[in-house]
Image (cartoon, rainbow, N blue to C red; front, top):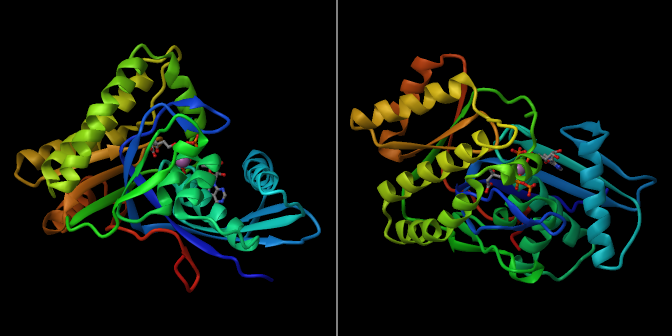
Length: 324
Ligand code: ADP
Ligand code: DP6
Ligand code: CO
């Protein structure tokens, strides 16, 4: 079996992508900024010249919608590069799948990278980020480590990811609290389409430009307080958009709200931390290294059975033993 295995780490947006101007090309209505995580990643091997087209995830054959999305994505890349043939996508997630912990970001970054390796295509990282975007928007940013930005652009060629700082000085930690890792009922793709029916959707988009500028400045100035405040505001606004939709919905569960309160209480006690939440119930707490252990202790006290995973900055796209 050919080894074209690529490893991509997941990224969590600090300024989020939530809304598309072109669903087919996955062009977003806003730019976004993320932190790539070291603790969560996907390994994917695209094997060519097989007898059929299959998708295996974590050792099991996947069928139905999830498989169709992956297979039609590879077929789309094949068309783009004028190649064809059967293939197996063999992938391992070291991240909960479809639970709001950004599995699609590492998944499609790893798959795009494995594709270009399998076909020996000479593609820049920028080009690779564009290919990853066609699979899942957030995957655009997982080509890069540290802090990354996805420039929204106006067309496919101008909507790509870029590293802001792949080895940041900030001792930023992200504590992922896994409350519920079951597959969410409303996928990110569906959720962000529903968001368009919210009266807060236009204001949400309008906020983005200033938030991107401010977040870039916070990163540049090594300013954890501004970064945390901005990330928390941005996430809260995204979830407020969802609650105000024609058919209101939320990814929050009771424990999500309990953790929001905990973060606010800890802050009052002088333990500086902030939350961000994606399309799922699981909460990520942003903190500096010096407070990380104490914050995790407080989470354990509140919710003794949940799994807590601490992350620092992760690297950009890798092949098994070599960097590209
Ligand atoms: P998440 O919050 O985990 O990013 P999404 O709703 O964005 O959830 O999407 C998850 C999508 O990514 C699903 O279609 C799922 O099948 C797909 N996916 C997850 N992991 C992999 C993988 N390793 N390889 C291919 N597709 C994957
Ligand atoms: C809330 O990238 O998963 O995590 O492009 O439809 O696959 P598709 O959506 P996806 O959406 C991510 C939404 C988010 C915010 C973010 O990662 O920027
Ligand atoms: Co996703």
